[in-house]
Image (cartoon, rainbow, N blue to C red; front, side, top):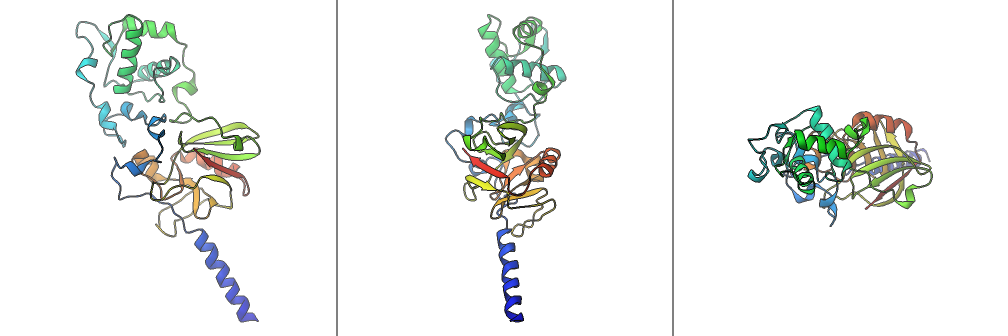
Length: 290
């Protein structure tokens, strides 16, 4: 009888380890431009983080960071007009410009403080609509017109909690305590009784190792965990479907959407996830949806 109990205990431990065998960890074999590095969807390319890349500084890890390194010849500011801000500039004034352009629905990405091709295009669009020379650069006349057409940005508008714009919550997220995870907007919203408490950017598995969709519950948590398959760290892991978990990813923080997980929901803001980890309880709901 004792031998039988020992065998049962051994089987139980093996089962737990198997469930924790994570389909996570960064996929290192994919190139930055790999089509499998982001969730596949007809609308995936239209999401807000598709991406602030054109207004990231050249050299930052981003699939299209090179787009911000130069503007097209047609977007070059006129040499006869003194420019306050133009392509290639980086400042808090540029951040304010971007926030104001977002108020005017001319930009969809969060302010970065770097004046890249997306900012140039937005400024050029504003100038065309307002009878100004469409140079793509901001001179005094353009800046005053933008200021008069918008409001002074708030702190959250200047530095929003997520780079990606949070999607409308799935109806299944509107009751109870829920990690509401949108594949379309690539965001996680922590919600309690229909109210959003916090939000953060997330990354999913590739086409070959997709993140499961549906309604789940947090089965268990581990502040420090290492993938038993890929041997990569998974801090602040909250497991919701077998070996798939919400967890911090240093690779996501470094490379952004140039990479992908092996199925887990990666978070790149460690501070936010640490707070979320403390708030989430075993049994809380997890909804993953398009």
